[in-house]
Image (cartoon, rainbow, N blue to C red):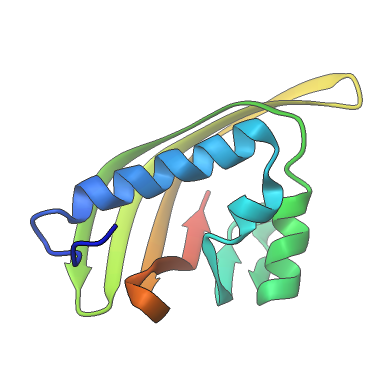
Length: 127
């Protein structure tokens, strides 16, 4: 996106990022999915453990194989300085090793402005 992110267009931008993340999962581009996270990101919620830093984030994301359906629904967004918050629901359905599974959760992302005015997830908290 070439235009600066403002409070007026922040929701459109966040919805676009979520659609791109879902598309990465659907096509099996787990490296692309992991790239949405900052190198210093933290994920809180998965099996009540904290995942922090690039290596752990990559490992977490690279395990998301076999995704057949992925859909994030953005419920609310806000912006303060170099941070954007997002409240959403997320659904995924997968098939791995011949078994099907799915997951639905509430989640909150804190996106942080990084180099070249890109935003990456700095905090991902979900249940």
